[in-house]
Image 1 (cartoon, rainbow, N blue to C red):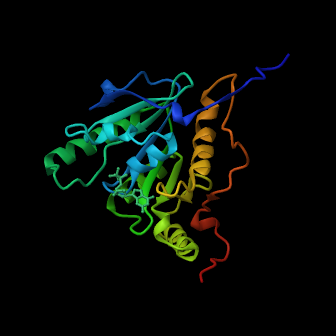
Image 2 (cartoon, helix red, strand yellow):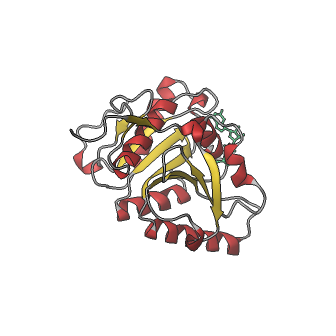
Length: 239
Ligand code: GDP
């Protein structure tokens, strides 16, 4: 008999607040698999997490005053699978010294966390690739951490606008290994792109869950774009 035949589904709606950490030493045990969400303040990160988990108040935890500088962990229904809400960056109210401290802790978290399977970088589709975004992207490339660019608030654009924005982002990315960075458009307000996001997360978490086959209800081939590194790009198709 081969491995377990059960298909265990990750249910993102099962996400429950587990704990906050202000530094790496306070994080949960570094085992299993976690996917972190990063984004500048106001990019739409909380709305994206809430849409993914179908829980309108989940990510509010991270916005409670005093908690914005913390990493917030949410457990999923599968043992040792977690979502992590990284602190928003760029809150005007947060003093510079605090922001520097936050940056230090974030760097440390990204560097040491073995169970970190991938990072979702949430960007407002109208204002992508700002300084913070570039810092995260450079870091992921340097450490070969899989990165998924979530271009949210896509409802602000028509189909053409979305395509154009994606092209611009693609062009603006630094050189990177093929397959390391993927990208999709998303709208928390309309609920567009949730299934694609789920599939990406399952893909990342799957290898860490030994002997259990994991799927979502909509498990299928991934249909958002894998970005081809500029060095591997064929003819650019601008309009
Ligand atoms: P965060 O600071 O990154 O967590 O951002 P929030 O999730 O709090 O969103 C910031 C603002 O953008 C709020 O006013 C949201 O209602 C709005 N917003 C978030 N996602 C979307 C979206 O998909 N479409 C639109 N139109 N607005 C959004």
